Length: 145
Image (tube, rainbow, N blue to C red; front, top):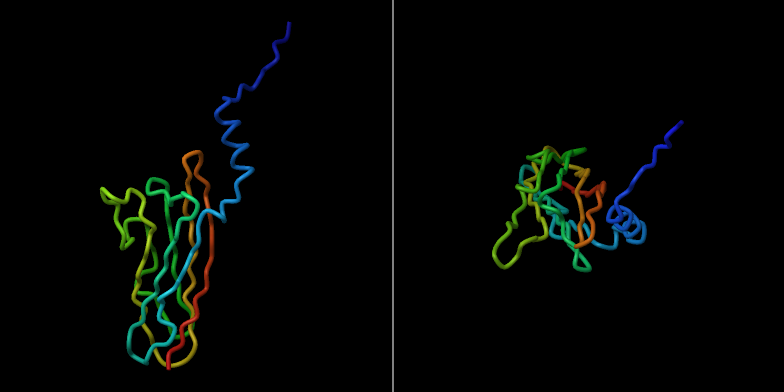
């Protein structure tokens, strides 16, 4: 006699997967570099500002990994190349459990000309029902003149 193996999937998991299929996670957040130095004098430092803004009642998870890898091209180099949630300028408080992560990174310059800061981001955006992993790559131009 052969016993058939049946895969039992918990109903909660099925509901979460169905809900995840219905939600476009890119509508739950916006990444902005507003305030980043776009022009820097030679020998001076600029600043990269990178913020993940939550939308529609979502938040960026402070428990799941958030990693940002930074690199520079041309005449611009970020002074820090790895960022994690703890590097955010905004910290949780009694009034704000999930503040939108905001990073401010000094940019070193060498010479004159165009440069770019690249950010490769991995983070989780969450609602009350689910958390979804996101990957995003940004390229921010900075000119030294």
